[in-house]
Image (cartoon, rainbow, N blue to C red):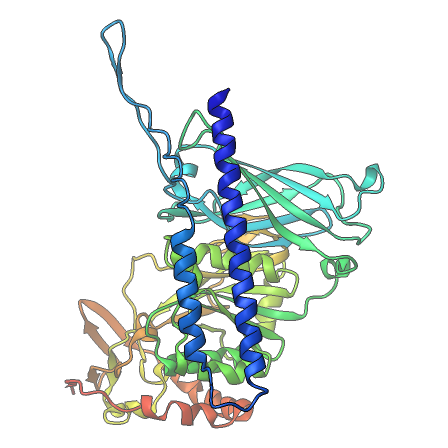
Length: 509
């Protein structure tokens, strides 16, 4: 009892000292300010400068600092459990966990899929999903809880892992939240809450559950007509993560070609993971100003070690963010060019595939080094697909395919196709549509052509190639289209990038 009284008196005395010192400090500062103000209004040889005041105040502070008693040191943390020798002679070892190896869930976006369904797109610890079974619960919380009909409602979240096991530290997770009835039907607003539980993964003694808000709908902002109305765009491009030192010329050619190919009712979403440097931005900006391109900065995702700059997460976010804005959604890369035969166009081809909710496109692999000798000395003035005209004709090998979908019928997607959709898929599109692939050219800043041949057939690196001028034949049309749409601003911006690099050319024939 006496010890507690002494401690109480000590803290009362300590508090009293602080109050007294604080009063002294405030009084001193008030007097100094009063004197400095008063001296400005009298004529006197005596002056006091700002530096004099600083010296004076610093001395007062030193006196106060030396007067204050030191604070008691903080209590040290309790020591971790130690191993111990049990009575039966067994040495019981102890394991002490610290920190966290990976986040439970990292969200990129959450989107409505209808009146009662949502999709949450993100990444999560890959070992947690490979070796355990984390679970999710979705809850809708209305803004106004005036009666039983506006109370929070919950449902089990159905998880989809769409990256085919390619994840690294993190794997992609799409959580589907489908409620038994419409939510926010009164349009008064609310929020979607996700409960992410480890279910004993990482530590079987613990079931850690993280609760976080993933989507907020403000009052009177829900437009339900979007789910049934005609989409704004006929054709929509969802691009993968762009990274590295990209060649602005190749980006310029790609966007001009596809803006012409898909037409005015098309849109392109470009995801910048570090590849859109100043000159690439100058190429894209005119198309952004015309409403053809949306550029998203996703560089922050580089903090989290997922497959290929979190490519699967990016395309799934694009799918769900824009699924009601597009009739058809395409997934391919910026070194690939979609093509249909001359006697058809993209509309007639897509109309013929209307019964399918997904179709894949065959690849035509083009050589990225060999050019025709007719172009020797002129390649720096030609576009990439204009001068790279030798097609890989090796038989009996599997080539990657790209694809297009009717996005309203998908739950999740991949890079080369979706495995999470309702409806039919077809791979029989030969003769209807294909794509030309110029592998590696998008990141090649030097001149692509390093070998020139005067032949319709050539073998390069043990692979047979044949002359194919399909894309070369339409280059002039694309160049005229670009000038018509955005003028010559891109030419001026890239003038210094079009100089021939010092390479050793090989010329045959």
